[in-house]
Length: 604
Image (cartoon, rainbow, N blue to C red; front, side):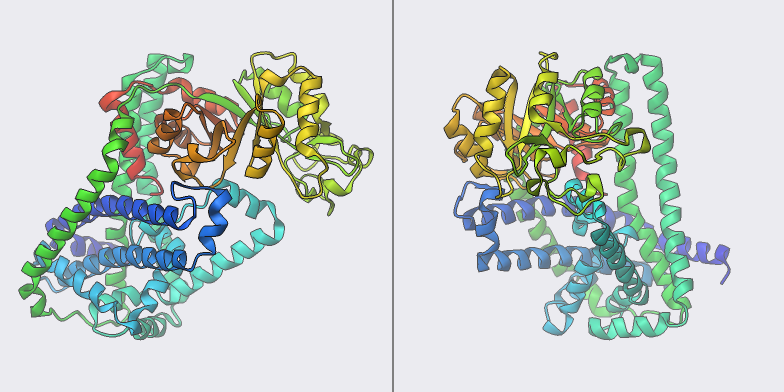
């Protein structure tokens, strides 16, 4: 079949039952959004109860959650529910397109019935492998847009940075992705066959591998072509909208910091294009697979008359489920919407490790560049050498920034001070050395408008680390201009005991619930994927501040600003300043709408 004929077949497949396809996609998208929100809320609330500290989830009680066997049961149930949702979407669309290939008109009820029937069949133990397949293959399936992103796990930036900063981990991650892609290629028809035939998923996967054998490269070409077409369409729409936005920005003078409602409207259109992309790419991808399946020798699907007779029952059950989930959604989101309508305040810029985009992190050049960009806060990390000197460094293990297999806690200051910590960034900074905490504070004394967030990184080899940090702060008369942060709650609480007047900030890579219940903590700084308006409001209601780390894209910055955080940590202060200057901080419906379109397209 020629490419032009294949494209026509795909178009005809979508067009024949287009009305039913459109209704199915719209209803599923809405239900997917609502159900996902409710499921995640229920899941997190149950984990709170299992944590031992029933009002919140934090790094400090994560161990008790993971070690509780009931938690794993909850996780398994959660995985089953979200995989069944993805399966519902895939099987429903495959059924619609298979009927289109027969030139048979069907109604929405029959499509829902077919999807429910296939999902119900999955409850049988012999079909459980389909759920494992969806979980394992979700990164590849999402990339090929076989379903919407309910299964797309967005890896936090700090984890991906850690993986790809380590040579062995990055190689392992790359190899794993390649293996998953190869497995996906050979099992690419498994979901289509499972949706069309009354056989087990294992049998469907075996049949798929037999069909693809000898045609794997051809199949890879089709998959990449489909992704490429989707990307071109998406970026074509987004690019056009972005171009108009840029034009509006130049006309209205946004580069000077003025706010334009036209800019906000264009941003909404831009994000809306992502939503459309996420909704209709599965339609294109699955119609392609149905066409290819029949081209590769698969038989036409035989219509099951029972599907038409059971559609009334399925619709009733579907409506009841939707009503229940919607009711729970209204309950959970009542405060969510109220919070979003509140007046927004421009968050402060927190320069993360200095300007670490333009100079090596945690070095004097990075600090000097950051000061030219006038941030409200500057964050950096400190460790202790073997002889007790406090050094500005993010890592204790120094291979990433020095290329040497050594630990800072094993070195004296004299030894550490000889290391080159600039060459890894660029030749321009070759010969750059570590800075002591004392030297850094003496430099920042010249910038009285900047507050320092000092992250203490205990290693277990330290000697009075917290007291040493406090002593140096007081010796430099910088007490009122410093905050102590740490990922280690015990460290934070030790600082609070040693100096109750020092502001303490708990840095959290996971956060949910009533965080102000955590003792010894004044403020919070939270990994950005955990930030929600409800969480920020909870913290604010307790009279505390909430910072977010680490945002390096305009989209993330906008989402965090709309959530109401007090400050945003960024490696790129210039980008952050330009982004925040463009945003509107009005409350009411405008804020609600802007956050809503960002929220529902998160991860798409």
